[in-house]
Length: 185
Image (cartoon, rainbow, N blue to C red; front, side, top):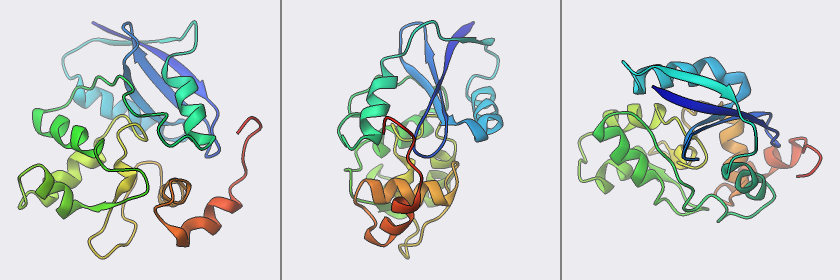
């Protein structure tokens, strides 16, 4: 059985769901309005494992680091302890995603080449889309080979905002500036 502790954390892009395990490792992170998607990903990654959710009794180690990230500390999420299910291939893709430097983007082809499987672009895209720990495993930094913004589980407007926040898309700056910030951010 896997027990996960659920927190709701405000962000400039809407409330986020933060799920951590008993050891404090981040298991899932998604936007509250995409909670159904998050549960689907958890069921797929932990098939055959009884997963129970409980409201967290205290803030996780991830919470203040997420707040710091949104406040402008682009290194706040570095080294945050993450534990995921998924296949070995998915975990390899997710680990490689964590090596994309802040302020840069890669194409799916570049990501596939980075893991030594240049022909696996489609599989890399599927693994990217199944990422349960958005932001910390920065799947938003992957764009189309023609430099267009392509799918993001949290929606393209959030992806545009995140990339502008990180300095990766100067053209997206206007969208970020128009986003209403919540108090404390």
